[in-house]
Image (spheres, rainbow, N blue to C red):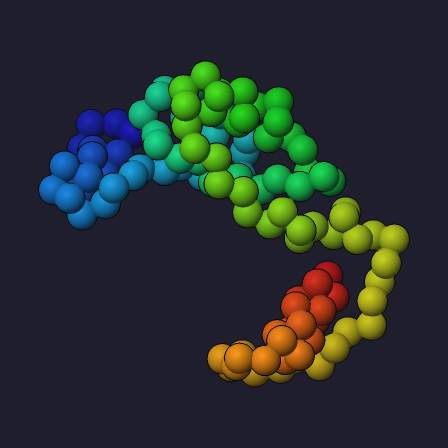
Length: 115
């Protein structure tokens, strides 16, 4: 965020039409909230789900104040969400494109079964 740093490069890229929005993310919610509080970012990317709610008290507060868009990742992926269930592991399957719901639902079940 200092002079000549990454933020200046992103502003230049936005001014040149190479990107439309500038976002921020991180793993320390207090630090991410400080970045959002500057009002310089269009979006913030953060982990959030019913087991991992720390962002509600830090990031979301600042995002609301500055009209910053919030993008959630891992809304359904966290070991704490599924501690009560330890599903059997499915064999790893190569990723491939398909048009059938069966293959995709097996892949989703497999992904959800991973610790």
